[in-house]
Length: 185
Ligand code: AMP
Image 1 (cartoon, helix red, strand yellow):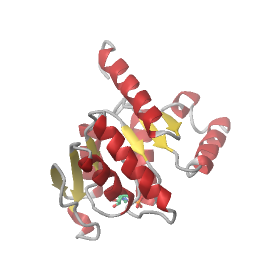
Image 2 (cartoon, protein in one colour):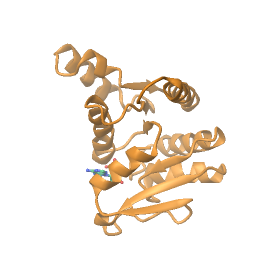
Image 3 (tube, rainbow, N blue to C red):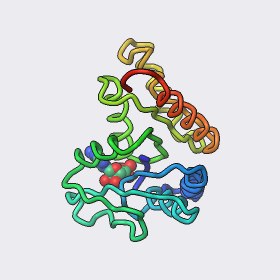
């Protein structure tokens, strides 16, 4: 999970994040995220934990307490720095989901995409769009594709859904398909 350490201005961001966490937990998905208790990050974790799900946080020491660790997590892994956080999260997950967020979320999202591009992993990447939050970003990526800077193949490394349920359906389908595919992932 990648999403904002802030909650955003509209209450709907927090509501969607919480509902997404609950929906994922209800389907038996374990969640891995940055480990803090604030903003959409905290809301996703709360939603999943309150629905009985398992949530692993990966919190870098370099933040020095700026993002407080969530007190109720199934597991809180402490790592030295941001790069280790992303590597550990990537190793632990079957797929990536981004909710609205800021620079940190975008950095993590693009790292998941660039690592997929160079073959570091072959895991699906999904955006849960809330009220068109990601629309300008998708427009830009489409422009970058038309301009020849993003390969057509790489444009489809991520998919976008407005509904948490549809996103989870698609993620489960891709993970199941890839798990049953022959050869290395
Ligand atoms: P934001 O979307 O800016 O609210 O940040 C979401 C999360 O990403 C926060 O936990 C940030 O600490 C984290 N973050 C910020 N920069 C990086 C980075 N370079 N690598 C990994 N995580 C980051």
